[in-house]
Length: 233
Image (cartoon, rainbow, N blue to C red):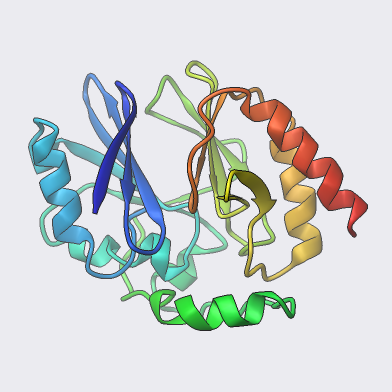
């Protein structure tokens, strides 16, 4: 796992498949996504490498239920009692009550999906708090929950207005320097509309589930991508 400082309050945790983010406030840490199965111990060590104790973890927020984002939530439960927060539509998937619906793949996505499909499962784990669109979570000066269905029905983004940071989950990705609509969507039309919604939020920094973060000018780049994506519908 690679640990990258994006700003003093924010570190990226990069795994072989996907990535997570660790946000630091004066009263503790928030983990946004947990990486794939097997990353739990690496996350604990990263917290300690940053000078914290694993008990400083105050909450875990999942952007959606896919295993490359939720895969290590059960492992983290072994060393942390931090509550797990998930959108109400994806909570039954995280808890294993319902199966994760398969994506509707475009032809060009099929070979790529075959490479990563094995990383998309996750052990079931109990959800402590279901979140909904418009909720404000107690970190980052007030983190606004944005419902962005399409990748999954319960996908969310998190907007930190005070810091101009937007966590997009898999609604958007970066690939070879370009922003793209996230792949492996359950409903591509809904995903395109969700992208347009994200483009309406003021954010300099964009943090994706896959790809290099955008450190400045994020909103302008999202608006450009939204226009391209709608023209391709």
